[in-house]
Length: 234
Image 1 (cartoon, rainbow, N blue to C red):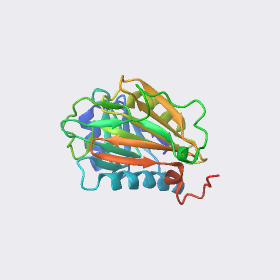
Image 2 (cartoon, one colour; image 1 turned 90 degrees about the horizontal axis):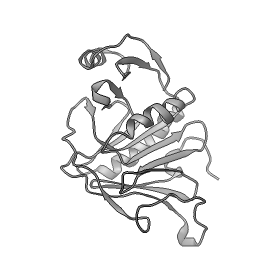
Image 3 (cartoon, rainbow, N blue to C red; image 1 turned 45 degrees about the vertical axis):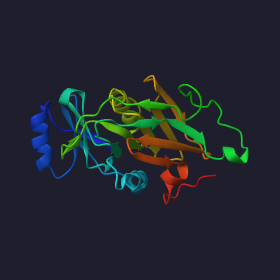
Image 4 (cartoon, helix red, strand yellow; image 1 turned 180 degrees about the vertical axis):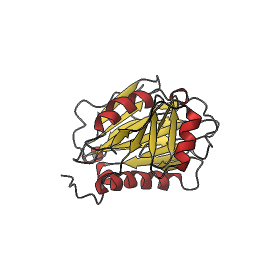
């Protein structure tokens, strides 16, 4: 979504008061307020596809899925974003996280990915344990997501790839950051290993991203991300 700077610096309480009364959404970045414009139909459909899979994985579970109307609080209360999708697990312990991207067709004997993503220890199912979570129960914002997804548009790609990525990876709870382009078939996953080192990998047609957060488990492929968008996967 495109942004326009609309206000001089404000504090957190002022931003939250304004946002509660506003007819449209605004993000707070370093104390500066930015208005958010509407997104394209394809952008919305991709975000909805991701949220659908997150919601399906969290039915009856402690983890919760959110779409773009839920704020994420960052950076000592001076920054609030509206991620396109989030998965939040606010139990006392996030549980085990199997962090990996797999070749979804390897059982057919197809070759593995070029430059496969490094894994901690041996194999693709190494386990890490996240720090204890806070009780992330504020009704208007969240602070400890395990998974964040942003859908790229021409106006916001640079922000999502640099500014937001720099802010998101400082979250102790975050284990996955997924970027999905709304203009072409392209997705990239960032994820954190057992030593708190971040890796990245583009998703190809033969890959899947396995997400494990708390008691929620799901798998995402390009087919899942781009379903009914008009972009064809070859």
